Length: 114
Image 1 (cartoon, rainbow, N blue to C red):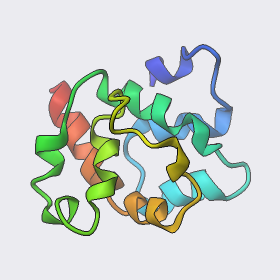
Image 2 (image 1 turned 45 degrees about the vertical axis):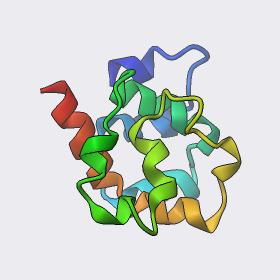
Image 3 (image 1 turned 30 degrees about the horizontal axis):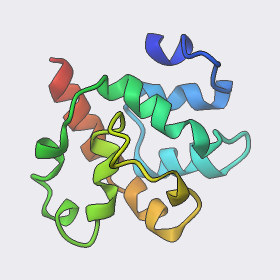
Image 4 (image 1 turned 180 degrees about the vertical axis):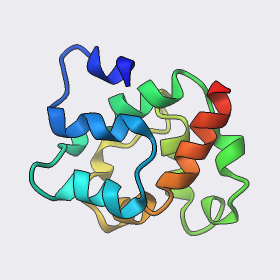
């Protein structure tokens, strides 16, 4: 959470709840799409706080859907990688499906930090 609070430029208050990494997919979607919402342009910065510069793709790939129909979501598992991150992704239906994997990302980030 401290990393998210210290981002420069700062992120909106509504975004800080993402940094707790204990949101359900439904809560994450509410943060992203309901008022007051966290503009998704901040998502990469928030995920980078959670992951640091670590690549947790191998952890995420334990969920076979990340290798199949959700392979485009792998960017959430290595948010600091410029080659993976597609900023045109926001607002697309494919993006919303990646939200269902929030517990997976959180688990992998958590495993990285313990």
